[in-house]
Image 1 (tube, rainbow, N blue to C red):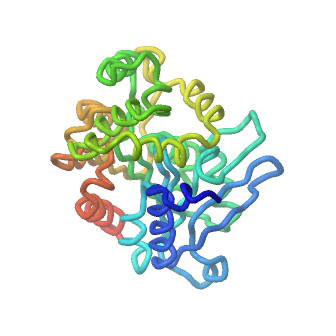
Image 2 (image 1 turned 90 degrees about the vertical axis):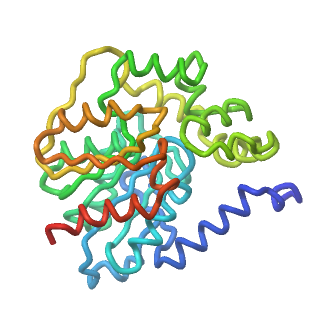
Length: 304
């Protein structure tokens, strides 16, 4: 490993994140869910599964860096006492891989939970992970108990997709979600975060982030984006869910504007609750972690 790799701010922060997750009682694990797909996840020791009676929470990350970059504050808050946490990397993110051309993220996550031996669980998904959470709840209502959908435009229409491209000044969604230059990543961070500070970071830092977090499996991630059918036309194909649902949204979200949250609440049915977090954008679980955690905890523990 070169000296530059050792001095990488991204690698240094990654080491810190790993120590945080380990201190919260989780271990880094990999599991083959079938002959073609291997999922990496953070979870409690397999030896604890038989005796641990805490409710289970499955955390599904958004399009971008792997799960530990997006859920660290939630893992630290929930893992020690409240929940048995499983935090996987979705396929082609982190160390999760697949050679299958006929699979869905929802099916992969359901297979993972089945392999671990989890029969019932709550699911929390942010952005892209919210799409996966919705489909899991729809396909396996007997397994998924409560659903939290955060900053996830599963009701995205063609007009919403076009508006996002206009706000980002990009010609295609891959340029927005998979930046390859410092300028593109600065644009994404400007949309995803309400903080102006991130836009002031130097190009060298953004290039380090791209090199360490956005280059791996890039081709496969582009194909994932191209395979997403949402935002292709004006017609929605979303059905209400049978579970209790919590929608969490930042009121300054520039990727999926808050009007989409209100519409999604009406679509998903009478068991749906909407919570807005003020002065946050697309990543309220990072920007305002304590309030996000309190809202989620109150919702998931409320009827227990």
